[in-house]
Length: 294
Figure 1: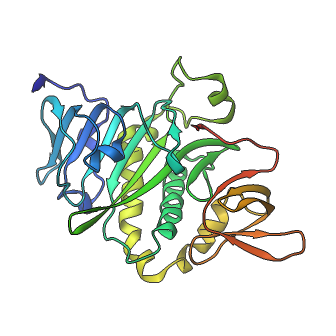
Figure 2: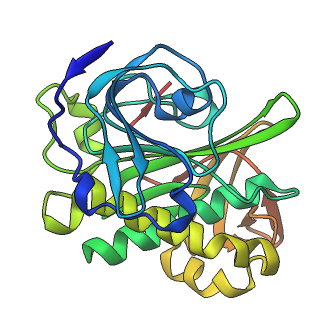
């Protein structure tokens, strides 16, 4: 069903995320439950525009109702003006405070250690957003974005088996622009927005994040954390801070000492011993969490 001409809220004419995206579709959605679920073929149809690369730029058709793809093309991505059922880590709900909601097919696939890739993708995103905006964006392990000790955004990676193939989709929710009037007070207290400006339009942010991740991924898969350790140390929101961590085996506390080669958090106990933590919710002592609701 065609719903007529589309108003470009995104900035499609200037959008160029790089050659790795040109063979896929860009689903530019007005409203969707979850951009990641949409790319994974789940959920309901959504209004928006189906965009293709025509050799010169992205061309978007008229606004229509688009079904989640049964077979997603390599390089495809979904970007939504509004996301109503975004997911945080461990199945929690991400409150949609406006800004950028984006998911993309990750390629090439790592042979193992997807958890390591989740931390690295968060690092590349924090670095790209910080460089573009000129603001000190940091990564809170494993893949939350922080600014001025408040939550700016979050990421999630979904690895699914579809027939004989594995599909890895990265999802990003980033607060940009003014807070909507319906934003709860408890969210405003712990979260922050990047603000509005020519450098922080949805198209510019999406372009820089995708280019950073796509251009650097082959090197990370080949060389691991070696070339990225200094960057991680510079952007580590938890570095040398006392933290409390809720893990499947119970609650841990200690001083954060970076990560190991698997992307696991290194936690220094009072006796000086180091523990490695593969998963869990970590909070800086004295601070609450941000923006996700149980």
